[in-house]
Length: 208
Figure (cartoon, rainbow, N blue to C red):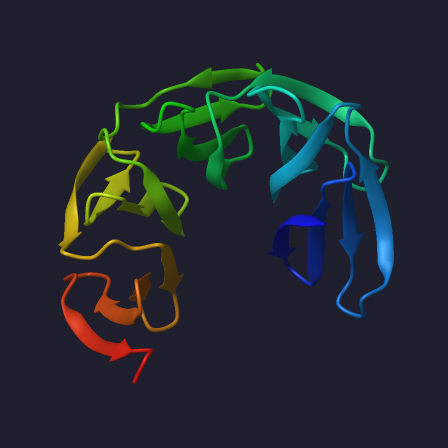
């Protein structure tokens, strides 16, 4: 069965529990398939630079690794241990990847992965609540939805996290760069906010 579907450019990367990440073009034609290490299955994926970054979960334990592959050949490049399930991954620059997730005990984490050095660095500590969703505004700015009913704005430079939207438990967040708006789903509502001011523009009850 599928464990994740990730779209990048005109391609789709499908994670399969049986131990593969399949890469299809916009016509649905299989272009390549990456084989995951024995005893693991792929979950979240991200293409950045020359690499396919894959969260790999051990079938019989809590062990999770971030593994980088060359997407065309499927050859592994390097790997490191993750502190828990990944919510989202985004590239920052040619050498760094942001990884947002939650530890196995349920607390949020933010890690900056150095590709060349194969090391993790924590820019700051996050709140005790779980991360539910993350949207990238630009390479250094992110919107993070937490399980405690708050949405925060994180910037890497200057390195800070501040309250952004209160009163919604955003299970999904998207940034619309054309309209400069944030779209957030919370329970059965969909909200639209102005990104600059965080002002609510529209809301819709999807059960109406």
